[in-house]
Amino acid sequence: MPRAVIRLLSEGDRGFGPLQDLRRQAVSDLREICEDGASQLQASMPDVVYEGGELRHVFQGEDARLLVQVWNDYRSPVQGDTLVSAGEILATNRRLDDNHHRLANIVYEEEAGVLRWRLYRFSASATIVRYELGPRDHDHGLAQSVFDNQSERSFMIQPLMHIWHLSSSRFDPTFVSVLFAEALALPGQPRER
Image (cartoon, rainbow, N blue to C red; front, top):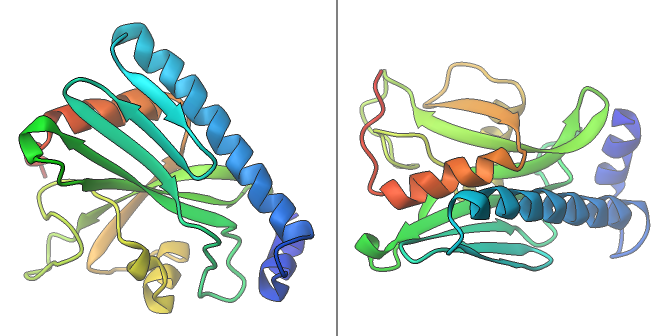
C-alpha cells in the first residue's frame, strides 16, 4: 500500500478519486476514535459534552475544552511522504480566558503498511537556547505553518538531531481522556528532564 499512497499523494487529484477516498476514510476513522474517546471520557466525567463534525471534534466540560481538528485538504510538502491528512489538538480551560494551547498534532499516515491516525508531540531540545515553536517546559503540537515547511516535515519523517524532539504514537480513544486531563491542568507543570 505505501507505494500506492505515495503515488496518489504525488499526483494529487481534483477533489474526487482515490485520494479523496483516503481522506474520507481518514475522517471516518477519526470520528470513530473521537466517539469512542468521548464514551470513555464521559464514563469518568459525565458533564463533558461531545460534539463531532467532519473536520472538528469538541469535548466541552464545565472547566475545560478539547478541540481535535483536521486541516482541510492538507498536503505534505515532502515528495514521497505517506501523510494523507493532518491536524491539531487544542485545549483551554476557564483559567486561560479562551486562549488555546496546542497540545499535539494528529497525522493520518502509513505505518507498517496500514494508514492510521498517529499522535505527534514535540518538545524542545535541551541543547537549544532559543525555541519559539512552543513551550520549552512541556510537550506540545506545532502550527500548520511548521508542517508546511519542507525542511521541518522532513525531520518528522527521518528524525535527526533538531531543535525539537518528536514522540509519536498511535492515536486511539484513550488519548482523549489523557489530553482532556491536560486541558484541565493548563497551564501545566514543567516536564521533568
